[in-house]
Image 1: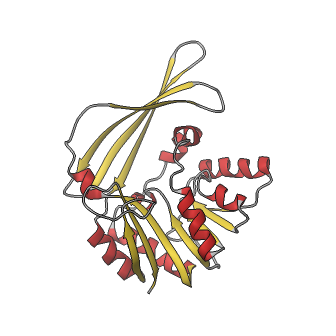
Image 2: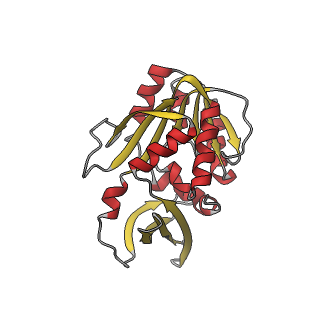
Image 3: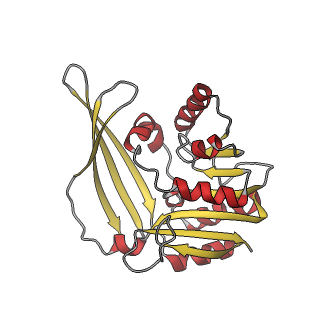
Length: 253
């Protein structure tokens, strides 16, 4: 499991992901069907939790990085919003509660790199879900990534204003995909322009694991789940060659 990365980039996270909201209608629709309580695994600053809490659902979130949770806590206090935040490792965290919806949003499972850790997470989620609940895993379609041409270039990703200081930040990335181990090693580079026109550079390396569907199906089975459906995006498009995402809905077996 990756640690440390989100502590480095916590203050950038909301600004760089301000346009990432295409999955929110999915989670709101599922919440309407299943109700609460709901838990968001790897909840971070609250990107997914906050819209659910604003609709009145009982929402919990767990994250390993306290710096990310601090931003969620600040939003709660400033907006008089109720959410329950848990600081800890999902693999070992003790939580005596059952949830109707267990969400592992945008790439969350990719932070677990070994089968031992992957199964530990899924078995833990199985213990937290109600018998009639639903698990949602949102992952990239590994087939599309593995088909792309490798490049050693530094890629310009986006520019944004860091909200606390107003500094202009240019975000870049350099990555290497090891297709044998299914591991992506990416270094995010944040170039921040300071008021004296000097540049502050932040390096934030991250390691992610790519899953294939047949592998994920077996992991879920061993973790105590059965797949209800798999889709190519959050609008339930078919999961097929060329699709961008691998959205898996699973029920307790």
